[in-house]
Length: 239
Image (cartoon, rainbow, N blue to C red):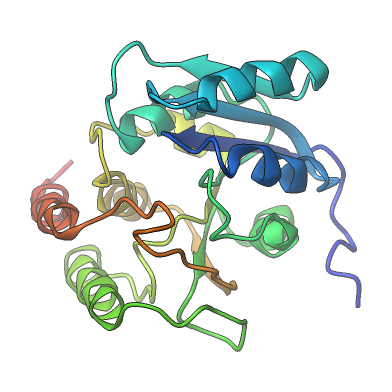
């Protein structure tokens, strides 16, 4: 079965935060733009100090679907996502990292429940189904599952992968949510606020091609501590 069947063209705004991703930005944008559902790619350069912004500018000059924004100081992934989400115009918004860990060919999976009017938000889970994934860090997987469990305890959801990058939303929904976190706290914050909004949330299985720290992986233990803070902060909010 063709995984693109039933997917209308140009329904998707791809929001891509980027920080020092000069080695992968061209390749990931090529794959993203090959997907028939993509109306625009909003890339937010978070004040990279390598050639990322120069490459983005060159690519945007030859591809009108690439829309580039640049922060004048490094603010963090969450801040870059806020900028990108605010500027999205297509009916569905999806988050895409600027590395090669997540496969844009799986956009139809992410969009499917929304297009069938079953969901308002869709999380791509690395921990369900039989999709391929690179075998990497044991303690990272333990940490991800712990953070998901803790988040679920406060949101009363039964997610398997709260920390996943791949999250898709109806545009009007995600743009209506007031987001505050500047770094990786975006994940627990948006999960808590989606739950509180009453949004219909689905999960689908996705593949995962993780990279090592030598290859540019940025998240660390301090971000895990921050995630716990955010789970408690937004989980305890009454509004």
